[in-house]
Image 1 (tube, rainbow, N blue to C red):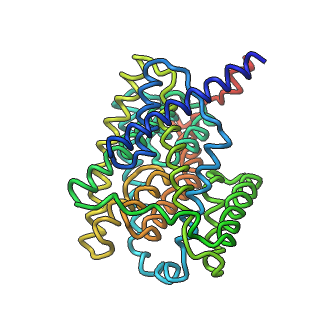
Image 2 (tube, rainbow, N blue to C red; image 1 turned 45 degrees about the horizontal axis):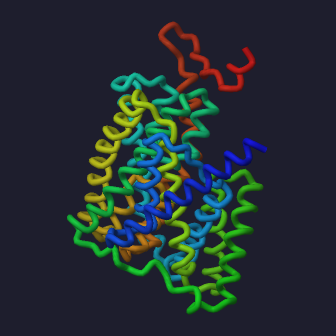
Length: 366
């Protein structure tokens, strides 16, 4: 009973802090107040030692909104444009190979992390997916969590500055129409796509089920002509709020040593990723495969949810951006365990094989 009371107190504290951050950012007229306000307020509170906690089902439900938003953007017109994106999408596997070729040695040789942790720290996949894969392979979960949280935090923070300061893009585009202006039948269909898509994908064991499942369901509805708009603005703002809060909460309990080692390492790696992202986005822009805004957002190595939000409020071609991020995430999720298994069972100099590292559950049995 005491545990449950403490649990809900932490959840309530988190919501109040996040709401205060959103209110302050909105009052100061800062960009994306419902994303950045909760994110920075939660981050400051976490670093100050406040015990924060998110309500996991609510956070996942927030991600289903973005899954539906992406799926609803896959219209017949976008589907017909997929062949035109082929050359640009073909660069994504090369992009990932370059990232792995630079990132793994950086984390292993330069930063001194073990090979498992180095490998999964370098992979620009979803935070939860990379931490889960890394944990199953015997990596350092805390290091993985902080490195990926830092990657997402910095990219989400810096991308709007680049969009407005360098590309002169506007972040004032409406995130969606108000719920009251949308047909109630379409609202019900989108809600059903979010719920059933999420749960069916979860039952199938799909990674990123809260986004991918609703995305597939909403895309099917969009292509069938059942829905013609994204989720309402209220739902998008709800998603922003809980995604921003989740990023900040990721720093709960961080120590000075971890700040010095893992967070600083994550910052340096983001610099390397930024350089690679600029190179590849310039390739697609100079080749005439994309406009600068879409090229930048398509190759920015942030989380799919966060990049979706930025694409919506920047008025970018959401279909183009999402296709590239989905390709990246699918390749990372499907290929990371395969390449990791090959990497950690390769032959050493004496001809014997190097066994994979112990899993955490194996250590607990000793």
